[in-house]
Length: 380
Image (cartoon, rainbow, N blue to C red):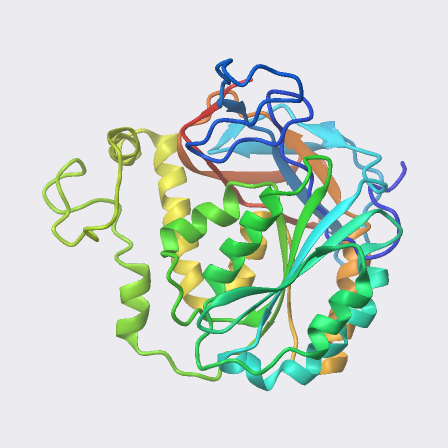
C-alpha cells in the first residue's frame, strides 16, 4: 500500500469542509460570504456537516511503522459508539498552511538560541508542496512576527530577530491566535501548528474551557516541542485559570453557579447538554473526557494539545535534541494513517475518540483522542 505522505516532515492536517464547495466555512455567528456573481441578498445557510479527521500512527514494539493496514482494520468510536470510517489517501501533494508558535517569554527566553536555527530547516519541514508559513511569538501577549508567506527566507529572518520576552507565557492565547489565522486560509490547504513552548501556561486571557474548544473544534494538528517550565506556579494561579473540575454547580446542574465568572455566557442548549451528560452514558463519557483534558492542561499544555488534535509531542533540552526530535517527527508523520468519519448525531460540545485495531496485537497506536462540535453542525 502506498504511504499517506510524501517524504519530508509535514505536519499533517486535512482541510475543513463547507456545505458549499469551494467556500471557506463561516465563523460561528457569521454568514458565509457569497460566491462571485451570487446575489448578496440571498440567505446563506451557516450549518455545516462535521468531518472528523483522525491521524493515527501504528508501530511495532520495536518502533517500526506498520504499513499494510486498511480502513476495515480500524475500530473507531465516538463517545463509545462505533463509526464508519474512511482511510484518506493521496494527500502528500496537497498544499500546506503552517503556523510556527514560539515562546519568547518566561522560560522560553532561555531557549531562544536553541531554536533560532529552525528557519533553516523549513525546506525539509514543508517538503516540496505549495505552502504558506507564518510565525507567532508570545510572552504575556501573543503577536504575529511574520504573516503567511511562501518565502522561507522571510520566516528564517523572523527567527533571527526575535527578542527576549517578558516573564509571561500565554500559551493558550498564542495557540488560539494560530488557529484563527489558519481559518482564514483556503480550504484546500492542510492546516498545522508547530508549537515550541514550556509545559505550563502563565497568564493567558483565553480561559481553559475556550482553549479546549479552540484546539479540538478544528481539523488542525498541533505538533509540540516542549521544555520544562522553570518557574514554580502558585496554586492560586492554576485554580484561577482552570476553575473547578466538578461537572456541575451546587444545587443542581441547571442551577446558577454562584462561583461562575459573571462575564461567562452559557446558553440553555449547552447547559442542557451539561445536565444530560450526567445521566446519558455517551454524554457522560464525553463530559468526563473534557474534564480529563482540562486537568491534563494543568500538568503539560503542549503534550495535551498534541494528543487532542492528533499531533505528536516531544520534549527537548538542547539544540541538538530539538533537531533530532524534528527529524524523528518527520519520519513519523510520513507513516501516519489518516482516518475520517462523519458523526451521525453530533451533540454540542466535546466528543471523545477511541481507536483500536480489530485483529493486530502487540502494536502501539498514537492518535487523536477528542474533538469539539459547535451548535451549527449537523449530521450528514
